[in-house]
Each structure stands twice: as C-alpha cells, then as structure tokens.
Length: 385
Image 1 (cartoon, rainbow, N blue to C red):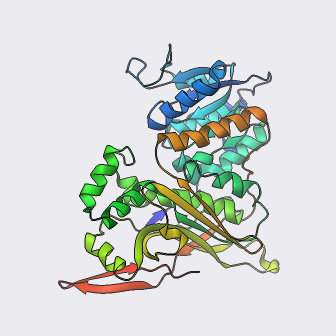
Image 2: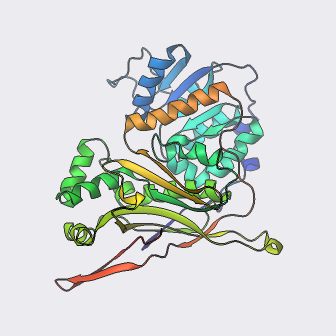
C-alpha cells in the first residue's frame, strides 16, 4: 500500500501565527455572513443562505466577478481579504478549498475573532487542531461539519454527545465518488465508464486523483481519528491504496462470494498507554484501502454517492451514521447548519485537543488472493463484526 503522510510536524503553534493576529479582534457583535468562493459547493451554499437568510449575506468573493453564475447576487467581490476584513461580517464561510489561500484567509478571520465555517477537509486534516487552538485564543469558533460525510452530522456527534465516549474504532465508506464508481462497476460498468459518469453527474472532479487515489478518504479519516481519540493530530502515516487498479473481474470475484467491493477508511485503537506513561502517544491502526465487505455488513449498504460512518465505543456500542456524502447540496446543508450554529452561539463547536499526538500504524486485514492469467491479486477482506 502506498503511504500518504498526514502530519502537523513543523507546523507552527498558534502562538507563532502570522502578524495578522495582532491586527485586533472584532469588538461589536454583528451577524453578517461573508462567503469566500462560489464553485459547486459555494454556489449551493450561497443559494441556500440567500433563500433562508438573505438579510444576513453581506458579501460573496469570487475569482472572476464577471463570470456568469447560478447565483442571484448583484455585486460579487474579487478580493476575499476585503470580505474577511469587512466589519459587517461576523461569520466567514470558506469554500475555496486547498491549503494555500484558504489557510491565509481562515487565519486572518480567526485573528479578528470571527467565526469560520469551512468544508475544507484538506485544511482541517493537516492544520485543524492548531487552528482550533488559535480560535480558542481569539474567541472565535471553527466549524467544519461539511468536511466529512456531506450532510451526515458525524463531526457534531463526535464533538458533542460522543465527546466523552471511549471510542474503540471509527470509519467506514467516506468518499462518495469512489463508492459511486464501485457501485456502478458492480452493476456491470467498466472503471473508465463509471468514472466518466461520476464526472458527468458532478460527483468527481475533472482531475479525480484526490478521490480515486484515496487522498480524500485519508484526510477525512485523519479528521475522524482526531475527534474519536482526542489527540491534536494524526502525525504518523496513514497507509493509503486507491481504486484505480481495480477491474470488473475484481468486483465479480467478490460478488461470487457474497461480498461487495468498497473503499474503506478505518482507524481502530490497538494500544492504550499505561497510566505511568501517560505522555506516550496513543497508537491506532489506520488505513484507506479497497476491501471486500460481506453483503449484510453496514459498510456494504451505501449506494451511489452515499457514505456510512460506524463508531464503536466501549459504552455506546455500535452507532451508524449514513447519508449522501458527495455533491453541492448535501455539503451545503452541513455548511449552512454550521453557519446558523455560529450565529446562535459563541461557543466553540469543535474543541481544541490537548495531549500527545496520535500515532498510526497500517490497518491489518486478511486478504483474498487469486491468480488470473498469471497475474496475482490480493484484496483485503473486512471480517470485523
């Protein structure tokens, strides 16, 4: 399996944040909303906010203000920094993506004590813990329900009702694009045909590598593991294997045995440090991999772009969270819910973690091996209860 490194090593602590942190924080309570980005997700967010709370939307920043868009707005901004700095904006909604400009804008908003809502899984997976700590220092909040699972309220559950649960395992099917592709292949489509259809429907990007190579699922798993195991980062290595090498024969071979082929992202605790060594990092098995799943297992249930996340806790037992995990509207639903929560409360939705980093080792699963035309293949089999 190829390794994808998700780490906070070398990332400055909140005290080392850029000088914008000294620019001052908002002192007058306002309820304006500023939206950064108006792509697939941003446009869905804009339409929903304008339908529900039109009087609160103060500004929308886009790369090209003159480009026709499916959003009724009179005056798009070209400078996102002006939106962040606008004293009438209290909640900044980041829908740009990536970890460059988006990171700078999020930092600037937090430094000014403004609440931030984002669906940016890349940013949260790599720098979320210390951004949350920085937000705690400035009195801001950082909310990212939409970063994992689209409309599924898994982040809110992990940060709220399950915050004190002794979690043993978390994960499942967390990438709607690959699930759509594998589902189509199980219905007889080839990989290229299934990918093209996912792109046509807007589930896959023109460059689909983040999804099909497992990067997206690895970022989501990093976020889930941090919430589940109460550690500030995933600084080890998350073993990652995508679906690009899978064939229709792989799908058929599993179907003959009553298995469905899914891209799984799972983290499970394998070691709890003794009390005398409380400063030692917690160790979990974590990995993203295609795997055969028995047809009656919850991981086999998602169809199309659906996701499912399973939480196994010492107290709560098995909990399942399922729903549509890809597309502009489901993601926008989670974003808008976070915006409303930010407007209604100044409490931090997701706490800043403390303690030693979470260390990961590769997820260990038994493999189904076969040889066809002289070519050996081995695909893991999910055998957990």
